[in-house]
Image (cartoon, rainbow, N blue to C red; front, side):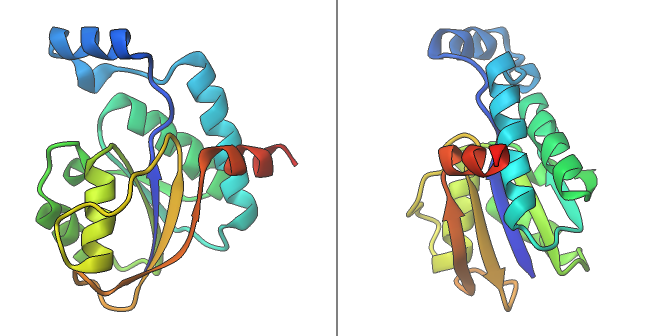
Length: 168
């Protein structure tokens, strides 16, 4: 299975983030107007390099769902919600969900530090993050066997490069 890991796009400055968290509704925080533009450009960049993506799975949180919608549209993939991608979900829950899937290629859209921890676990077998994804960075992992420590990075592309590809 090939896993395309994508962090959600920009969703506000530190003061805005703090206000959303204090309100208890951080799951409703949307992408900013500029964040939506950047995310669409990055998704268009992904469409230029991703050969196949059957499904885009998203955290149900609004900013991730908006990012996943742009990615799914650009890649002509089905969009599904995956609660195992919320920020405080257990890594084991995400892996269990992945094991139910039959696709050869799918994308996961979620949040930091959860996505980096998940990717690191799949790559190294340890639950200590060895990478950090920017907004909306993408990382492609080849999983010959869907077990922690069996992943291999095929590529990682930072947001600016994805947006540049999307504007070509």
